[in-house]
Amino acid sequence: MRFPGVILALALLVVSLRADEQFIDAHVNRKLQRLKLPASPRCTDSDFIRRAFLDAIGVLPTMTETSRFLTDPDPQKRARLVDSLLARDEFVDYWTYKWCDLLLVSSRKLNNKSMWSFYGWVREAVLNNQPWDEFARTLLTATGSNLENGAANYFVLHQETLDLAETTTQAFLGMSVMCARCHNHPLEKWTNQDYYAFANLFARVALKNGDVPGETLIFPVPTGDLVNPRTGKPLPPRPLDGKPLPLADPRDRRAALAAWMTSPQNPYFGRAVVNRVWRNFMGRGLVEAEDDLRLTNPPSNPELLDGLVKDFIAGRFDVRRLIRTIMLSQAYQRSSEPVHGNEQDDRFYSRYFVRRLPAEVLLDALSEATGVPTEFGTVKARDFRFDTASISKGTRALQLPDSRVVSYFLDAFGRAPREQTCSCERQEAPSVQQALHLANGDTINQKLRGSPVIEAMVKSNAGDDEVIRRVFLIALCRLPTETERARMTPLLVGTTGPDRRSALEDLFAAVLTCKEFLFNH
Image (cartoon, rainbow, N blue to C red; front, side, top):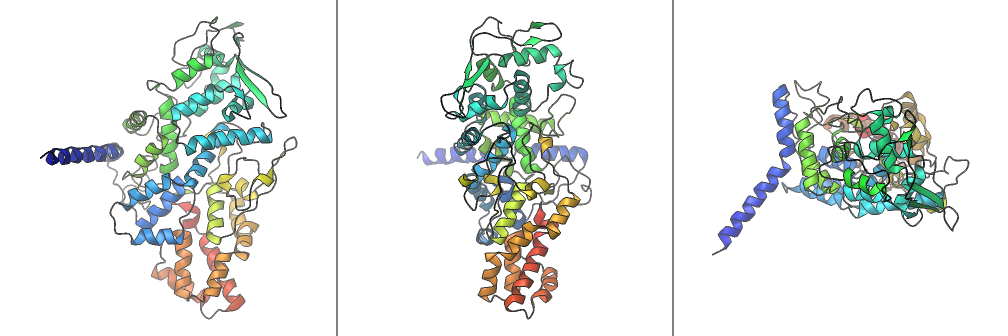
């Protein structure tokens, strides 16, 4: 007769899990009620599948995946979809690319072997769902050959002590301390002494050439200090808000830095990555810009940010778990259509914020919709040559390890050049250049001319209604409305052979260049 007790325990566990998953909505809804902002309703299944695919893994669902999801009656299908996305190879591609942007993985300062080694290390960490604290700790204390230990390339990229200090705070703490290099920070509490005490933690990292071409060895040394130019003396090395270390201590100072950085008590570390991940899915950081977490730039919902960080730390810095929690929230699943009263909301999440697809995601979406992969050129470099032979045909933009591979489309649509650790590198604003390229550029035109998807439609002798249905499912993950069908049909009526293909190319071009395709909503 123990079953009733077991059932009760399971029921309590389910309630507890549901409560944990809903803490996001409790904070968001409380804020909306306080501001008297109405919330938009739940988004449609068509909107959700397209949104979830693009935000989590950077690809469009196939027509089959969309049709199966739209006809699935299971009320838990959204949760099942999220779980399936987190297990896909494309998830690894997407988040590897994102963290490579953050860590500036490119051939700008790394030779070809080093760049691939660094990329491989990041990818392996994402694939294995390495906890974020372990990821940071492994990177910041890396030693040995940069070809065998990809994380060591962090120190090859940033060989100047001050560069290391500034990049580390920006990447892992979401704040810039650069202003304190010359004087006390005007917008933060950090002083010039704080800056040089923190930077002195990196003063005893040494590099030397290895035994094979392109190899660099990274190792700590027991002596050496960074001098504050204002005083002419070194300061005891100290993490920001941390305890100083003795100047004479010969141990690797980076270990103390990593321990302080990844401590659950660190008020900055968890907030930085939580804010980055939140912005990826919600369109705007709780602190905006996502890497500007200074005291004078408070979050739009402090209680929500604190709750997310607390949950992230309780989940042992599991980024996948954080992503799942966000995607299953009501806030993420709201419609992007405004309702009366929330039209002007751009920071409190009363609706999903419409935004243009990132350059790489958009280019891959065009390739998927047309069935024509992008062929990438050689890297833009004088002193380094990128091994393009190692990139197989069919490689997607989100699978590129190097941001310097030639692509007019990616440059026009604002990919990050990976020159500095700043979210400002990625350009999201529309431009005339983008509009002209979509209308007259080679990218879409060449893909349409060589599209096997269009060729298959011509050969299948599918009727006009069926063709329009397929195009909308492929590109927009929904069925056309009656109005759209009525407007599209005259373009196709009576066409055969070459005329049929030409009409289908025009139909595809119209859909692939519309706002609904170019934006996530």
